[in-house]
Length: 355
Image: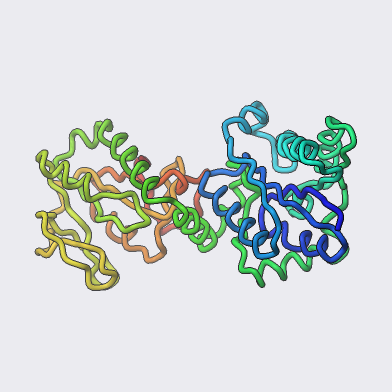
């Protein structure tokens, strides 16, 4: 079988192309070079899906590693360009130049890219970038086949379902994320997948950074009574933070789920599993006078810089927060949960700031 280096952007774009190559006398080596992808957790999810599929077929996959800072330098000045514009061309050149260099150094005479399978991309830009990259290395050719034709686009959709691929809804970079804005269900699924690949060490480090930023905030410094939350595994971790500041004299309150609503209880150091979801909560009486609370730490699935919040879909906080109009609301999340914008509706409660 003829060797070919296949620059791969994601598993959904790769499946039908790899299948066609294997059926037509080509054995691809998968080259994963996508420093454009943001955030890092998104990069990991896409790489894992590519690796899973390649290994299931006995194919080699090469990881070009992740350098988003270098990619940002490459497209500097083009951040405001529309999708399929000048920024995309420079992005393609950077990634395909890396693929061309690897191909030249490892004995390949032919390389191509799955970028041409994506509806987010322009065929002419990919061909231009591929030919330019190939021209930098004597004896190397860019295979400019249009991978959307010949039934491959239809087969692409079938393989996504057959393999249960994670199928993202945006190209990859932070400037293309607006495409996710209109669908809460899809955005929740997307964020859940990103958080799932975070290691315990990463969650702990990001949690510590969140609390360090909050501790410098004047609203926190002034607050004596704070409504917080006892974190689940996929949320910014609160136990050590709450215990630290309880010992230093601040009073914390925690929510308790009662039917379809949240009630507030004072944290006294003793917790029991909640009845509905097992989330630890104080075993005490409901606090009815919420006037002492001046700061609320609010978890969520996603936030944006405008303070918009998207929760888990049950509306608990959207029903609780109107009871505390005097208190500042601080959104609390991991970096991968911060989006350029999040889908909202009239029932969603806006944050005063996001940590």
